Each structure stands twice: as structure tokens, then as C-alpha cells.
Length: 94
Image 1 (cartoon, rainbow, N blue to C red):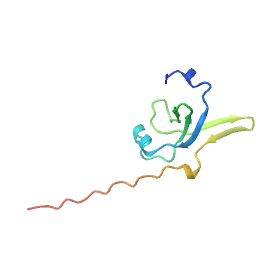
Image 2 (image 1 turned 120 degrees about the vertical axis):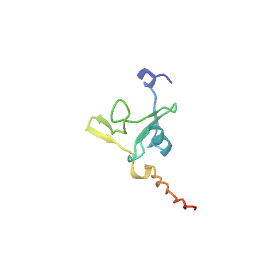
Image 3 (image 1 turned 30 degrees about the vertical axis):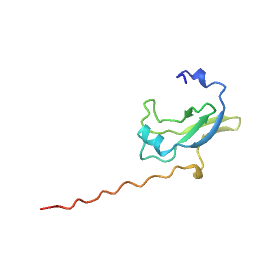
Image 4 (image 1 turned 90 degrees about the vertical axis):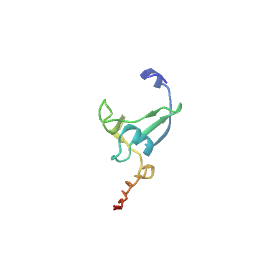
């Protein structure tokens, strides 16, 4: 896929889902809530970041005839957080 916005024109949204744990880790977003992902028919994934550098997820908003709205995955789409790994104590040997 090209980085050109023109390459997105005409593509349909195939799915709306929460970002997976692997996708969150790939972005370095480990301590955030669910992130909405729009999956296009060609497999392209779109999601909002809070800034141009991708320093965290952002909210995705829209505007229609009735006004502004937020695009958000429903709670049933949320990706469960993985509990942190517990450190095991090493026994001291003399």
C-alpha cells in the first residue's frame, strides 16, 4: 500500500475492532485502554494517535448530519489486558 491518502479513497470499511495486544505492543502503547481500529477491505488498518509522532492512542471522531460523534469500540470488543509477569525471587546460595 502507498502512503498516499489517495490510495484510501474508495476503500470500504470491512471491520471495526479493538487493537490487539500485539498491535499495542508494536506501537509501544502498553498502558492504555482499548484503541479503535478501522480495518479496510484491503487489510489496511487505521487508528488514531494523540499526535503526529504516535506517542499514544487518540480518540477518533466523526461528523454527520446530526452532529459530532465519537467512534469507539463497544466494551465487548475490548482486548483484555495481560497481567504483568511476576518476578520470581532468586534464592541466595552460600
